[in-house]
Image (cartoon, rainbow, N blue to C red; front, side, top):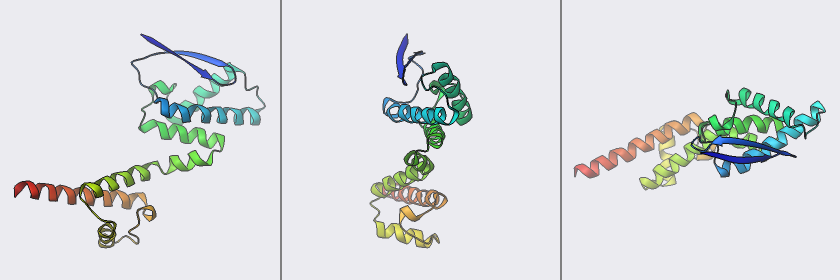
Length: 172
């Protein structure tokens, strides 16, 4: 079965895809498509191209995907691993500071989420977390101040802490 969707640039590009193959989610597409358009228009302005030239757009778009992620189409992309890498590439081309920052901080944001999940799971307070940070030799106990490598170590410590307490509760 084939699914059809229209990519509206300034004209329309119709693409058919196998519906069994995953691409970016509709929510991701809502951010992705406008950013690609913004990057395309910036490219057209700097290269003095007609933005409505669909063949030039397709060539440019495919080259950008190859450069960003080594793929020809987002149908090949993984929604988790590839989305930020591709968005970061187009954000840099478009000069979109919000997406450049968001993509650069993606791993840290995910680790902070994992830490907060472990804190909830183990009923760990912010004061206790600050104490763990001090014992680990970190300068700060505030999550937003810690670099990514410290966040990973902290998450690992919380995960092991929770696992120890869970297994000791089971043994009793």
